[in-house]
Length: 343
Image (cartoon, rainbow, N blue to C red; front, side, top):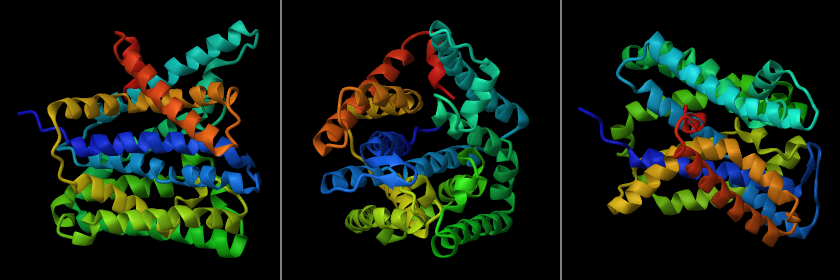
């Protein structure tokens, strides 16, 4: 019997996808380089839009952990198939970049392009996420069995990762006054990604228990906490002298925000029509395509809009969301090519 689709997870994926667009689109609106950002009143809105996207990446890892680690069985065949699927996507899009460079007379080693994208190098820098996912997938069989059969050990490992993340954040802010994470490529910040991945898995197993915590289901409290964290993040960035949200993922506030946001949306009872239900599924199914495509859309629109102006930034953001989802949807309807946005 086929299991019922969890539409709440689809909604989380859509929101995370929109948030990652906020992150990348709005970073161009006030960040000059890793050590400097524009200082004027006009960019406050841009900053808030940018930091509203901080939990996008944690949510993506939590969704993956929720889905994978709560499967009935995971074997080598399943993991091999998943990794090959990820690599097919990475190779396909890097071949497009290779051909585009070829037409410009710029010959690049395609193997280096693929490897580079997996470690946040080159045009497809966002593929670092796939690189981390490949590494974590190699641990999925072990983690799946541990969650099912040795929950205490699973909790010990999860708490250990939480402690490591907290220590990294505290040391960065109060001792080094510079992000320790900056010395490690995002692909290999596995203490952070594995924590969120395993947290998603644990939430999946304990979903019924989590529903009993009424404060987690309080949308007003969550909204207030969300606003507080988003307003605090610019100050957190000043504390470590670099404005990028990626250096806040280990922070306790972001961990609480991500966990609360995930649990709230996961447990939210939904009464929606079949048409809206199908729309959500359609948008969710192309979320990876949007993740792949949106940086290119942002670059194109960046030549048309001065996004340091809040209104232009908002227009650019809305256009990027619409064009990215529309393009990914069209790709999803093309036979064979649609595999390039599925993992």
